[in-house]
Image (spheres, rainbow, N blue to C red):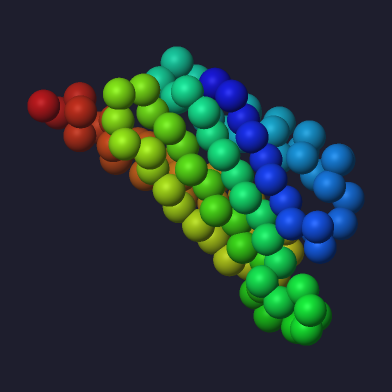
Length: 105
């Protein structure tokens, strides 16, 4: 499983953050490792020019299962950690549903 992390230029600590996200994805999705070809994560600061105090960090995660259409989820939160962790949790649930449906057939 290949993991690709992209961040906007307004996200601080990009190198360390990318490593941390890759480790979290690897750990969280280890049960899907043989079923996924790639996981792409895009993190952006929606209000970077305004510096608002709301939930302006968005994480979009796309998981590409072998032989299936990509599964895309997104999560918006106040911090980068909350945004990507929430997106990973949503992706895990979506992958469980997708692979569960295949198993039921």
